[in-house]
Image (cartoon, rainbow, N blue to C red; front, side):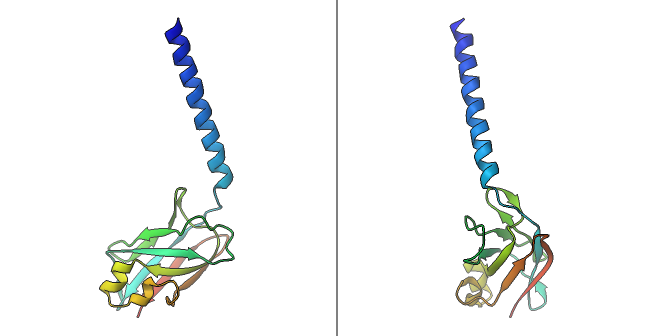
Length: 134
């Protein structure tokens, strides 16, 4: 009998932990909208690295800098950790990962203060973004 009570108490405690953590995530989760596109270098898709969106200082959601690995054709789908695909609407400075920017000999693209790339994501998202590394 005591084994059944212990098991029941354990299940109830686990349920409470799960329900409280679910509520916390739901309250803090930002509105996420699609942000997809391509990164090109010399007209070809850039790969073997990642792209990072740094929120503008006035952006509503500041808790993450959305990222994406670049695919073989240079395409990307931005993700916001830990919530998944998409980004919060707002303005972003955009950088390449340092190793990738260094590999194409354009280190400014990895420096938040020097990158020429910016993007504004509206409440409906943006799915046709193209960045050209020059």
